[in-house]
Image (cartoon, rainbow, N blue to C red; front, side, top):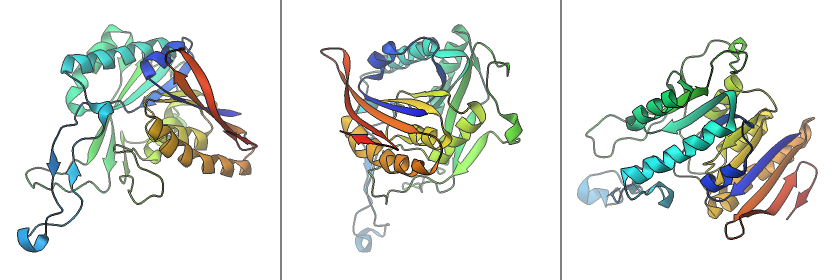
Length: 287
C-alpha cells in the first residue's frame, strides 16, 4: 500500500512531529527570496509601441517568498536543514531546487553537519521564457542541490546505476499554463521529480516534500509507488491545486495491484494538533 499524506501548515512546526531517521529521501523546492515589486508590461498596444502584446510579467511569486532580510531568510533555511538532518536516515538523499547564487552556504552547512555534497544536477528547460528586456540570455536551467547524509556507500545510499548511465541533467518543457487545474507560479515538471526518484529511491520508500506547492512530488510518488508526506502552508494550494490534481490519478490507480490512500490534514496551531479533513483511496472517498 502506498500512503500519501498532505498536511496544511507551517513545515517547521509540522516536521518536529515526524520521527527521527524515518525519511528515505527529501525532494523539495523552498523559497528563493527572489520576489520583488517589479513588472514588465507587455500588454501595451503593439501598434503604438511596436512591441509584443501579451501578458505582463510579474516578479512577485507569492507571500511565501517574501522575507524581511537575508538574515531572516537564512535563519529559515537553516532551521529547515536542521530538521532534514534529523529526519533523514543514514544514506538518505536531500535534493533541493535552489537559487544558483546562494549555493555556497548550503555546501558549508553540509560540511559542518555530516552531509556529503554531491554533484550539481540541472533541469534544462526545453522552452525557456524569452527575455522581454533583451539585455541577457534566456534563463534555461534550474539548479538542483544534492547532498547525502553521512555516507555515499551504496550499502546505504540508493543509486540505481542499473537504470543506465544518465547525464547530470534532464531536459523538459516548462509546465503549460493552459491547464484546467490552477498552476503554481514556480511549478516543476513531474518528469524531473520522477527522474530523481527512479535513480535515488526504492519502491515503498518514504519521501518528504515540506514545500509541496502544487503537489508535483506527491504525483511522482503516486506514479512510482513511493510513500509521500507533503507539507504546504497555503490552504488555497492544498485545496485548489494538490487535491484536484491527485484525485483523478488515484482513481486511475484502480488499474494497478497497489492500493493508494490519500489523507489531508490541517494543522490547528492553537491546539497543536492535526485535524483530518479528507481521506481518499482507490477504494473509497470520505470528506
